Image 1 (cartoon, rainbow, N blue to C red):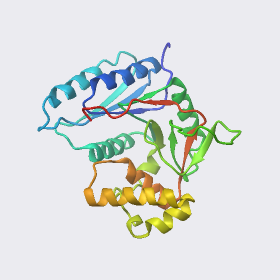
Image 2: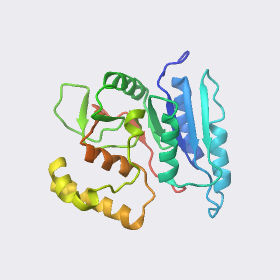
Image 3: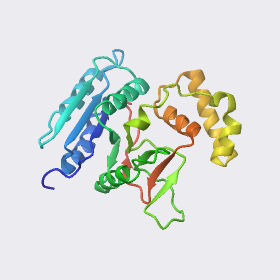
Length: 244
């Protein structure tokens, strides 16, 4: 693929998996984004070999060999999945009005970039749409369009606008801990879904689980915002590895 094909800025979120990082980075090299933001969490001091794995990851992404503006956010110590990711996305949107977010275990197809770019432009003024997703787990649904509107957010390759993200409150529980079952059951149209999410809220509140995406989900539940998902799945999720 000659020249730059992706005009939308991309944030690439990394930690300590050089093999995964290379697989996603190879796709980025093919599509040649013209603005690339790379955020990598720091090594854990109590994890053997973590320093070397993080160093290997940063070596992989040091080889940007196409015409591209690159910004990096490399942490010296480990902030954890929640803080590192949230701060990185906020950092990204301090520079950009909209963009694509990829993690090291989400391998995008080339169609993913075309889809997100078109949707970001088409729906930029509709503030009720919070995200453009690359993932669709549904096997059957009725639609004549090449995308659907969904109340559920999937973090495996997605895009959004800075005015959506920067307004998000960072507390993952908000008021849902008080009205979760009643509110979610009505909003999601399913008592099973309401129970599922209520349990997630409870676990995060009690165990202080180190995750970032649930707070984005809950914020959009409360605001009754929606997300756009493609007709076909556009992301190969290679999953959580042993070094996660």
